[in-house]
Amino acid sequence: MFEIKIDNKTQKFPNRLTVDQWMKLAKWDIKEDHNWPRLIGELLNIDWRDLTEVPKGQQELLIGFLVSLMNQRRESKMFDLSQSTFGQWVDLDIWTAEGFDKSLNKALTILGPTEWADEALWKVEKWIDYRTYIYRQYAELFGLSEDEDEWEDEDQAPRSHQDIIASWYQIICSLASENLLWIDSITEQPLLATLNFMAHQKRKQIAENFAKLKQQREYELQRTRR
Image 1 (cartoon, helix red, strand yellow):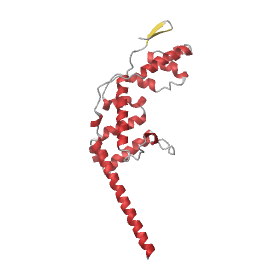
Image 2 (cartoon, one colour):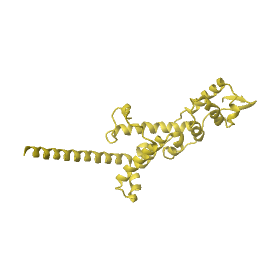
Image 3 (cartoon, rainbow, N blue to C red):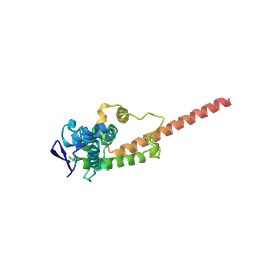
Image 4 (tube, one colour):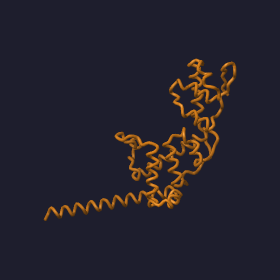
């Protein structure tokens, strides 16, 4: 265990971070050195003002240990994502957009509870991998390019957290035929079954639009021939 002395008091670095500790630390921009005393104080549970006189070189060393702790990962038992309901997928997608410094503890209500940040972050990485896989599998449904690097349209402003919430709510309401009483039954459906249904609906709508366009063009062509 790493130890330092501050005001003649020995302070010990923890071997692992709890989820609560990680979330508090993740809210600070670690690249800004004026935040370092606050980060170290949060980690060691001491008043950050006691650290302002600590030389920058020593602060940088302490931050290096802190970063190492925050980047730890440990495999842990978690929820089988292939068994996700549509509602669980939507919640996790929204919390991902919100940022795990704000939503890590909420995500664990689905991914599986744990006290430790290294286990929680391992679960999150597995979720991110699964999320990427699903978006690739249903790229046409979500209007995405097969190339992940082109998923963000440079000509459009990035969607906010509230935009993503509104978008998913609109989809859920549409699937529920705008009936409030049916919303829970929609969110409780299996994820893949719901996405397959949505993909079918989109292909059907595209075919209907194409047929209408073709019919309109034939009608206009007949008019020009008269």
